[in-house]
Amino acid sequence: MDAETIKRRYAAGERYFPAANLIRAKLIGAYLPGINLWGADLSGANLARAKLWGADLSRANLANANLTRANLSGVKLNEANLRGAKLNFAKLYGADLTGAYYDESTRFARGFDPVSRNMQKF
Image: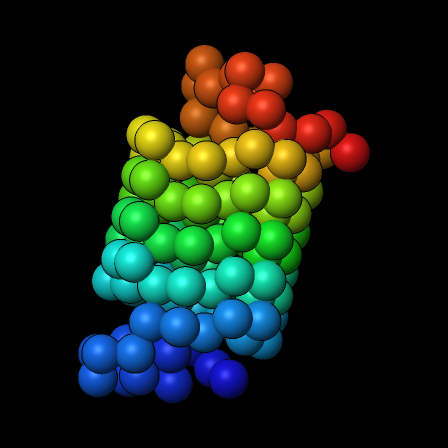
């Protein structure tokens, strides 16, 4: 599945895309609030400035994904792989990051504390 297919199906009212293969997808500025991408592979994807509030990205692979300035308010990121992800200036208000994985190359917004959000360093 590619980025254009996801956007087209989302626009048609579909929200459920579990385990979708979106490796290196270009979803810059995509408007996808409430989308369910549980377990999806978004490794290397570009989601800069994407609007994803209320989405389910639990167990998603977001390794090396660009989430700069993405709106992730209220997003479920339980057990997501965020190793090497860029989360600079991302909005994470109310996001559930319990058990999400990060490493020394993961970039967070200034002042963000992954330990206080129950994330796991890997």
